[in-house]
Amino acid sequence: ELKVEQNPLFLSMQEGKNYTIYCNYSTTSDRLYWYRQDPGKSLESLFVLLSNGAVKQEGRLMASLDTKARLSTLHITAAVHDLSATYFCAVDSEETSGSRLTFGEGTQLTVNP
Amino acid sequence: DGGITQSPKYLFRKEGQNVTLSCEQNLNHDAMYWYRQDPGQGLRLIYYSQIVNDFQKGDIAEGYSVSREKKESFPLTVTSAQKNPTAFYLCASSTTVNTGELFFGEGSRLTVL
Image (cartoon, rainbow over all chains, first blue to last red; front, side, top):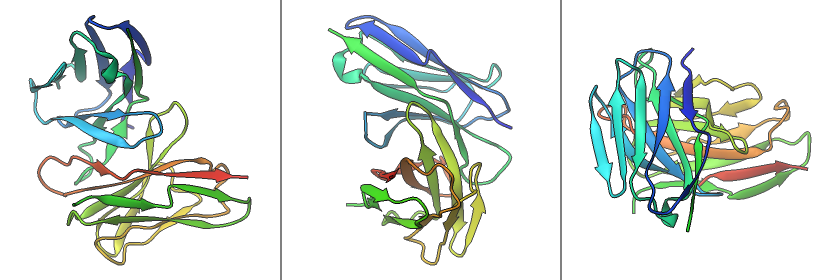
């Protein structure tokens, strides 16, 4: 059974600071996704990582994937209040065709002024 | 505009009643999914369908049923057999090729009174 673990689960940080969210998963996979969810809202796709060593950046967020370590990171640079949200990583099991994502528990990020 | 439409957004139900949540997409995606989200938790897969007239159970299918008679539509019925149905339900779709990225609807919040 594929397990996906995120840490930390709760993160409170000040504006302007940097931090990294970690996503570990338990089985072989080279497809990993990051999503953002605002309170009471749906999930918005942030990054799609499809190979070992993949790195993608959008604004103050950068995501990377190390399939050998079964680890993805989401790095936040110079945080701003608008980044406050819950961030989920999700891993696609290679056991089935198509997409069958297993989600982490989410990291609730609060950026304080 | 292409997207996924879920209805209703909010639904209240008495114990013992079945309810059906609607999900329609005009993205021409082959695959559709239903996820359940409980407060402070990640998403868990209920059912998914990769083609019309075919669907598979996810991790928590007990007490739920689905149909896929049209490519655009994937309704979810929450039956009275579901012991704890109060949750946020998210429908998603994807192509079965390429990145496998999921696109989500706005969600339906079901409360059992």
